[in-house]
Image (cartoon, rainbow, N blue to C red; front, top):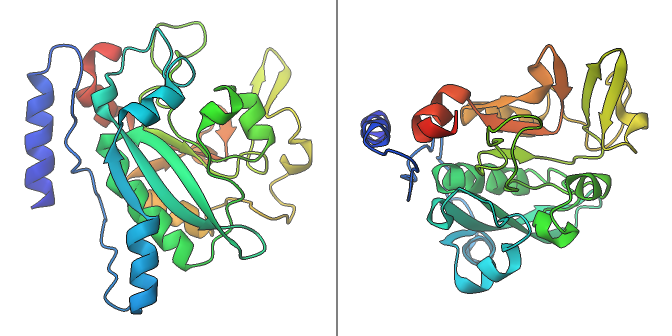
Amino acid sequence: MKKKFLTAALILVVATPTFFVNPPEVFAANVNFSTENLSAAEKEIFEKGFYVKKIDAEIFARIKGKSFKDDCIVPVEDLRYIHVLHKNLNGETREGEIVCNAYIAYDLLDIFQKLYLANYPIEKIRLVDEYNADDETSMRDNNSSCFNFRFISHTTRVSKHGLGLAMDINTLYNPYIKEVDGKRILEPATAEDYVDRKKKFPYKIDKKDLCYKLFIEHGFEWGGDWTTRKDYQHFEIKSDIVKMLYPNFF
């Protein structure tokens, strides 16, 4: 059934001339989370702690002019708000908020439910708007986030974060690294201690990591696999799918 739904979704994309308004929430590559084996108390926690909803007026007021910038060409109808729970390094439960594309909303919900049950440590999951939508500031604070409308540098292409189709996890400890004209670019700039991926340190994402495995199972690709640059914090939807969802953005 999932394949049939996805096929229908892609057919609809072809008929969409500019924007994919209200993208179908059927990506769900492996959404198979079940609360059957949880206690009544645990089920109540999950019902109240994990949910997806459309962007209402209150949430829009928080993101308008920040992650949802004045030149944002992604319809707000394409976005969803997700409330999650997560554990920090001390095993304490924290609340998290995510704005993402509707196309991946239930994938992210499933991933974060499983990470929570596994006591996987994520320090912070806050809307990037709490950092005035400044990525560097958010990353330095080891914040995990998704949607932040922007164009790729020196292009007219919208980034996958700008479409709400990419998620960054534990960003300080999993930096972005690239060589440009013999000069290394490091983001965040305070992540020097975490460039050497052979070292042991908390929050590190590698191929043995549960976070990596869950995102890959859900059809995302990992920036740590890239050859021309490394983005160890970054998981995104593959470009062929994005091009079908938003053909005029490429």
